[in-house]
Structures are given as C-alpha cells and as structure tokens.
Length: 353
Image 1 (cartoon, one colour):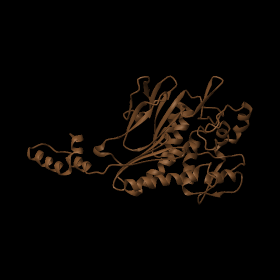
Image 2 (cartoon, helix red, strand yellow):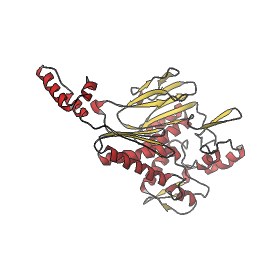
Image 3 (cartoon, one colour):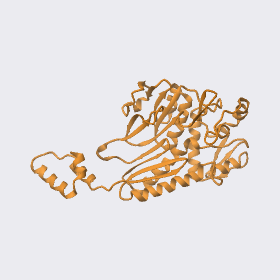
Image 4 (cartoon, one colour):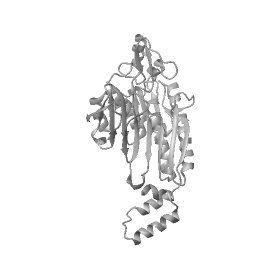
C-alpha cells in the first residue's frame, strides 16, 4: 500500500485518507506517506576525483545545489591532500621534509591528526609515511616487484613518528627522507567533506560514494535503514549488505589493485613492517565508523593486522567491521552482527568477533 500511495496524486491521496478514516481504518503513518508522495525526486551527480568516481544522491529542495557544492568541496580537498598536486599541503610538507614547520590548511591538519591516532593505536600497521614504499611498488602506473635489497633500504624511511603536528595548523617531517601519502584515507576524507556540505545545506538526507568509501547523512523515511552493499572480493557481485542508520563505511581489499609476477600475485596494501603486501589471511575488510577518515584508515590497518589483532583497535575507535578471509569465511564484529546479512552463496558466515 505504501508503494501505491507514493505514486498517486496528492489530491487523490488526501481523499483516500479521509475515506479510510471515515471507514474506521487506522491510518498510522499515512501522514508520512503523503509527505513522501509530495517530495521531490533526489538530485544525483557523478563526478571524478581522488582517482575514483564520486557518486551522490541528495534528497531535499536544495539537493542539486548541495550536490554541486559537495563536488566542489571534494575537488578542493584533493587539491590540498594529494601529493600529486604540486602546491598541495602534502606536497609542501614532502618538499620541506627535514626542515621547519610549515603552515597547512586546517582541514589537512585535522585529517593528519586523526590518521596519526590510527597510526599510533595500530602500532604502525597503518602508516601515513608509506610513500617511499608505495612509490617504489608504483601500483598506480607501473606495478612491479622491487629488488629485496631496495625494499630493505626504503623500510627505515617509513615511520609515522617522524610526522610532527604543531599549533596553529602547522606540521613538519623530521627527516628529509620522510614522505607523506594520504591515499589510504583520501576517499574517506572526501566523504567527510561531502557530508559536511550536506549538514550545512540543510538537505533531508544524502549518500555519497567515493571509491570504496561511503558517507550516509540523515534519516530515511519510516525509520528504514540505509542498505550498503558489500562487494564480493572474487566477483563484481554482492557479498551481502549492512543495514545502517548512518555513519561511514570503507572497504580495503586485495582485489582492488594487484599484479602477477613469476606466478605470484601482489596486491597494493603494503605492510609497513615488511615493505611487502600484507599477508594477514584476509582478502577484504569493511569498517563502519563515525567519520570517513577513521573508517578508511581503520580498514587498511585491520587488513594488515588480521582478525584477532584488529579487535582492540576497532574497540578503541568504537567501530565495527566485516572480515573476509582467503578461505571464504566471513566474520562480523558483535556491534554489526544484527546489521549484516550475507547473500553470496560461496561464503560462510563463520562467526561473531
């Protein structure tokens, strides 16, 4: 009946409401249905930034304007935190590594602050100074297996403790060989930027997806949850879904970027301790958290740490996760067990953590 009411005219809906009321039919929720029937279609916008498509669906009278403003905000963010942009904050810090503190944008400073918290709490499993190693492997343009002695030589350059945050939005890198790469939190940060625009614009609700990160804003009608599909690591299909009232979701998976050399497959999620792709027995980790940066950083950290070692980290940041192992076992943290449903037949829901 709800679906039918959504498609009839407002005038007809009002008449139907009166008729049902006169007949003694309980109309709990009818007012909500009528409101929905008068609601405008959502604004949708797809753009490209952060090396990924940015897909938005925004509900409300200001939806189109908010989507455009959010797109602009994401582009501006990329221009601040991408090491590829010559005059970005991150490029500046990399260029001035080993020198004095540099003034950076408040947004960049806050992202670094959150990212460094995850670096510390994960014991370095997530590290924002991974740049020397990620550049060495060059997964984006020319992926290849570096020489073992070259990896060993680059390892000492990766140390998040070489990043210093000062007052008044300043930061510095301790050594000239230290370099930042915020690629592991960029898409989550983009979701944060978009959601901030939605909040300021006063839109009813919205969802933004940037690569493997998703931001949810506002409540759906009737108290229904947002349903976020999780990708099957082995196919382009769906593993299952999370039913959530809000928050941010990010996935890190070995399937995203990989290459094969001499019969061995190498993926892009590097372990800062070894300099090689992480070997944790996982193929995918999806994290739900209170911010995009947190969900993105935690998904990477948890992928490196593995199942058991990830739990204290997730608890520290009041976050939840869905883990997929190499042998097609799916594990869900206790705080997401009621929200997750497995649909892919090739996997087994092995337990709650």
